[in-house]
Image 1 (tube, one colour):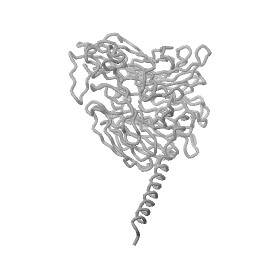
Image 2 (cartoon, helix red, strand yellow):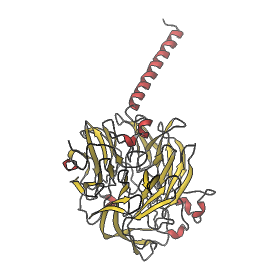
Image 3 (cartoon, one colour):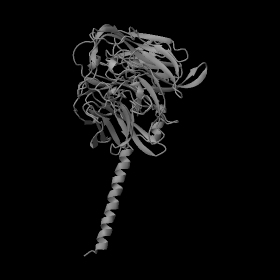
Image 4 (cartoon, rainbow, N blue to C red):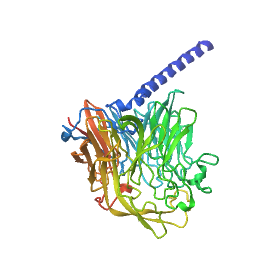
Length: 548
């Protein structure tokens, strides 16, 4: 018979072996996701696409060399994956070491072979939808896939299998708050800790926005920054009475980070109620603003803000992710940050100070100073006009910024009062009735002068953002479903392909199986539906193209 000492020793040995096995599995699983160094160097990696907008800078620009103006006409469909969840497709596919992760409108996640489009695993979730269905992608970190859902959950899935690791309700109130943005992984160099940045979507439902840093191990909160200042905080007096309590200012558009200075740039959404501004007198900070936050400490501290539209009455916030870049102004290099808003304005700010450097109107603007009334009035653009979510790209070779914009007008009406009802829109009016025609354009804007190098007109809105390549190409998807390639210098249309569904997602580039691919998602029109589009659901698809 073994002694108790021998039994304890044996048990301890088994415990050590078990712990070693678990650690080994954890390390092996973590190897299936990017390291902190890979995230930092993402802009210079032509193989993978590991952050929603390519890199922390938010610039949709790639250094891949295989596809250029001389052979882009040979691009052909390499594979197509049919998504089994109908709805609008707005996601940014994440690609790492040959695996592509895509999401659907209702928070399904698909892991695909990036070279063939073959399904590896699928996670299905059908959350309660407050108003509209949209998911803009996943975060990849520490061996897991992270997903924010339409009913306010933050979910971790095993990156190799798709099995759920943990699931947490992360929003404060599921009646008015949810997630549409992709969680953004980040490694804090000072604390040596990983975190996930996720912004809440709730501005049109009577909530206040925030940007939160979560612990990827269990979803616990590391810090939270509120977008509407409370009593005693700078900017609080820009709200009349207690209107700040349901002030909106959601964080829709993603996270941009200067890793050298540990500065986070955020675009904040419209004030709420959207169309009845008499109940929220003042500038309504920090709605319709870009803010720069110092994230080097235990809690974020504001470095500067720039408000694009004080006291917005038309839901004309800047939904696209800020783009951090170094361009030439007066022949000198300058670090700048750019964005666009739904009023159709393109803005360039000094990245260090927030000072306005340039402003270009990209669409037809009309009656913008007139607030919606009980009788109603006409103003341009519509809430889905101007510059939308998918953003743009800066090309250092041309010193130009490429961004699409939409010409849509609307007839706006307000109500006598705005009453908050949990789970319903808190608007103080009605979304505007479309007044066509509804068209779009791709704009090439010279950073030095703020003038257009060229513009390409479309008979339909051009929601698909912009992807620039070091070889001189610009890719973008049209709402009608056509993926297009332009010459960055001349604007000449070099290639087009009809994906068979409506495009509201960004174009991306990656390498797999010895080939360079261009990929884009397309699906239903959803809220972007206009009379000019053909009727019917065309399904949801991921389309990948190559010249080989």
